Amino acid sequence: MKYSIILPMVILTVFVSGVANIDAEVEIALEAELANEMVEPMIISDDKLASDGKFIWMEGAPVAGGGGTGHADFIVNIPEPGKYALWGHVIAWDGNSDSFWVTWQPADPDENAQQTQNTEFRWGVAQGAAWHWDRINHWLDGGTFDREWKFNKAGETSLRIAVREDATMLDAIFVTTNVKATAADQANVRLPTDRDRKIQVEGLAVDAKGKAATTWGSLKRAYQ
Image (tube, rainbow, N blue to C red; front, top):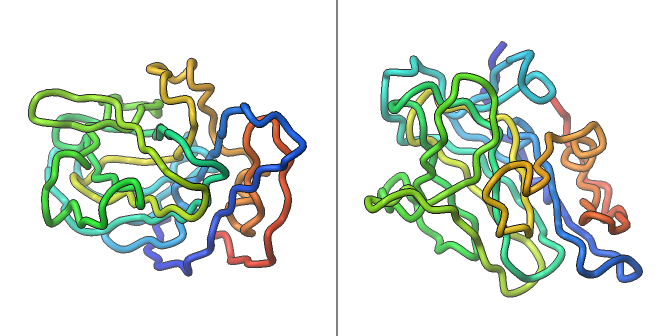
């Protein structure tokens, strides 16, 4: 079963409690199919092995090559300034289905990477025919390097995962302030839980690791 949707922009808010450990790492797990906005040809499809049974992609044969339109947007309020890294739970079948464009504003400029083809925003996804974690990187002409984003203040950020090649699959996203980790186990990556999904759907506050969470409002949308 496949879905093609444009969803309203529901803000995902991260709230930090002042009574908890200020030095705790921020860890946020997001379902890709619960993006705040999704534009064709990026769609939702089913896979019983994916987190909560769904993932997003531009549908196509693994060897078909380029996409170039369509994206998924996530609005996330980060709890504190600093450096952040992103990990994706992915499948990339081969060299023709192993990349997305990724921009995260305001750390990145307001640029349409699908139009500019700026390799600073090209994510070379680690290949593999089973679901696996991969840190989002710069796939530059001179090599592939882990990305990190620096935000000067807490507040609303806008993350876009845009189609570059069809058949590249994205199941979940993990946001962390642990920018030094180069392996998934070092970063303590995890798939979203039922609580994470409830937070993402209902607009509740997301907690940093070891910190108390609170609600921020009553914004809700249907989860399909």
